[in-house]
Amino acid sequence: MSKTLYVIAYDIPSDRRRTKVHNTLSGYGKWTQYSLFECHLTDKQNLQLRQRLAKLISEKDDSVRFYPLCAGCAGKVETIGGEKPKDETTIIV
Image (tube, rainbow, N blue to C red; front, side, top):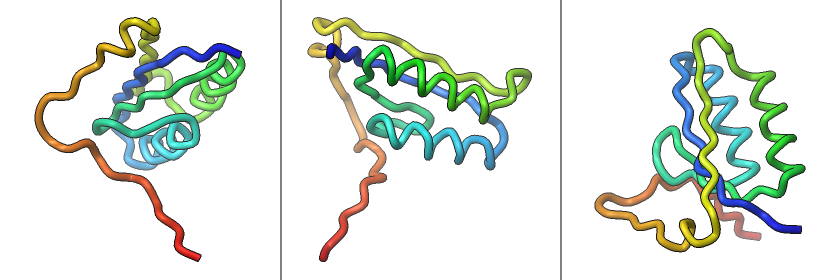
């Protein structure tokens, strides 16, 4: 099962909808910048995610963009400057 790296960016003015989109994307990938996720998705996961997001957003007011990166391009991603957002939870038992 091959996966494609998608950079997913969103512009959502409503705090409530933006939070729901953020939480949904958190289940599929890594939060790397504000309003931006990097997700390695199969074709099935891509379709499932798009369907879930479509139910959360206002087509009139919101925008969610998927940018697929080929394997060669994904390996060339560079970060310059500040730290990435930290949204990871550590559970200690």
